[in-house]
Length: 386
Image (cartoon, rainbow, N blue to C red; front, side, top):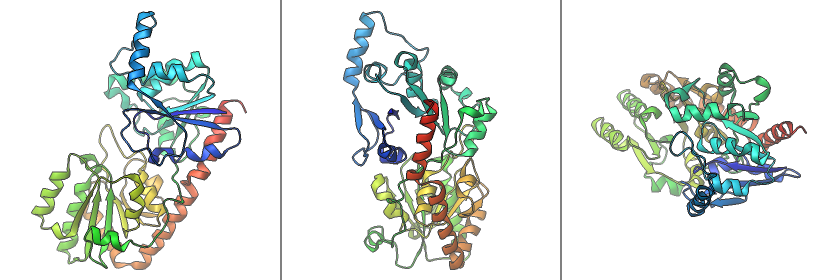
């Protein structure tokens, strides 16, 4: 079974870890296609990588133009290295990509010529969301009948596919997986605490993600202000990430007099994330739903849970399904509820420890990449008629 994976310019250890165990299955030959404009570090990716270069793509495109074979889509930037992939995809049995992407359009277009089966990892959890973007809408409808099987990352996403009319026999939920040997409980790194100037003994709250309005990070600042108003002093909030709201967050923190309670780590490589999770007493994901987006899974929740950290998260999108009984939920945007959930954990060490244990158990049960790769393998076999 020869398998190719195209994840556009988002190839990283974060995404590859869910597919890497497939390389250990008998008879599986797997390649990961990576463009030369990839956005992330791939040094820790263990899958064989086949590089796609812009220079070669241009040269092959010119040849197609001169031979009269060049086909243009109805929108700009529809394709993802179409000519380079056309050259390289001979002999593949399965090609996998993610939903409504340029690579989905390209692989759909090349499918009949190359004869592979097309499997799509599906993340979208808002029905018909693509109608707000004409290009995405075109890709989704173009690819619909060319997709052999959908793999939604949780049942909340599967329900959206069913609502949109995809036959259930073409859908198999497989929870996205992480490397449980990488994300595991470890003692707090004292050196890292000193590096971020976190006082010894402080209750530590962690957020990792984009600093964007829809991630709701400002709710964490408001909740911290409420905690301080109610007499809580010995806590530190660590914020890891980058984004357009960084300066606004700093302004709010300054206005609220919370500079002593917040630390910004900046953007960190994926290899460092485990150490951060193990610094925390609790992980918070305060995402806000919008008309066109809600939390599709929240991989950071799974990472925190794998490190035996209780999570406090907004009840938005797929979050309730991911968290289950391993954390505390609150109404999106309700910073007073968030404050109350955090204070409960600060005051109750047995609840904190109990939820941490449940978190690790849930991560091992549902989100272990090694176990879930076996389910992906069975989907591939089913699609190939095996």
